[in-house]
Image (cartoon, rainbow, N blue to C red; front, side, top):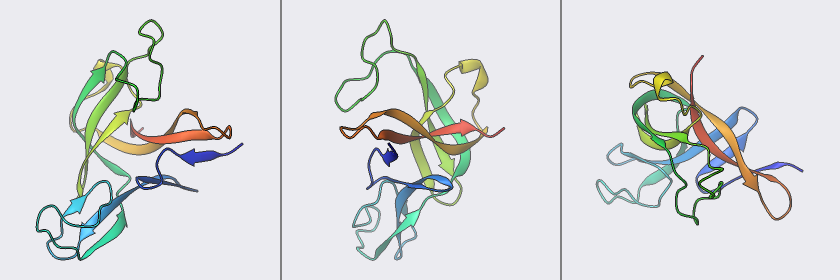
Length: 141
């Protein structure tokens, strides 16, 4: 089986890895994620879909220590089996901040301002047996 994006309106899977779909307003220059048909800043509908940057800096973070509500959460919901994970805001230069799952869950390994890059993470399977891939950000080695 193959891999499929958890949401094709939010993210494409490319040969180079996952790429987030955002919006750029041609009127005021605002960026929005995910893509939408109008600008919330100036209300213009003169917008274009853009691929967001793949690297940025960790702006703020926390550790998700218990299972989120399901749905929409697709991971392990049994508190005894749940594995904590990092969640943070990644500032993509010249664009915006994106809220994202982080590949690191050790709080001693995370610090504001560290360089991060987007990666794909398998979070389950669809009804056809394909791996469902979402995005996460990992520290740049």
